[in-house]
Image 1 (tube, rainbow, N blue to C red):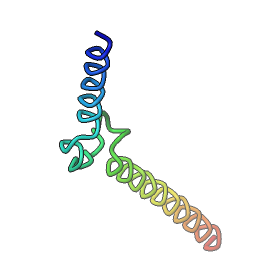
Image 2: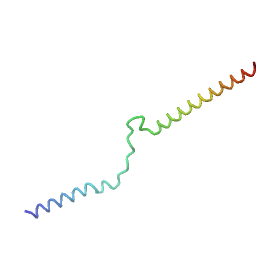
Image 3: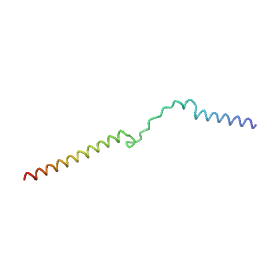
Image 4: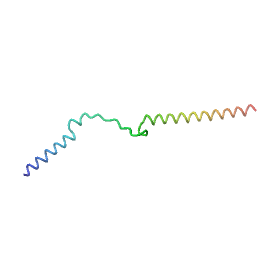
Length: 77
């Protein structure tokens, strides 16, 4: 009876090792990470950052142009 139990345990162990490391696991291609929201999408975040930078730059240029215009108006008087 003990020999049958040991044989069953060995068969179960072999089956589990085969399922864990068998041929079906050798050629698995890594899956791309699933995007669940906009904060997971690197391209979206990059575009958002570029848009923010462009808006900030345009605001700075507008402020600088306004300062220059005021400076010129002050000299003309």
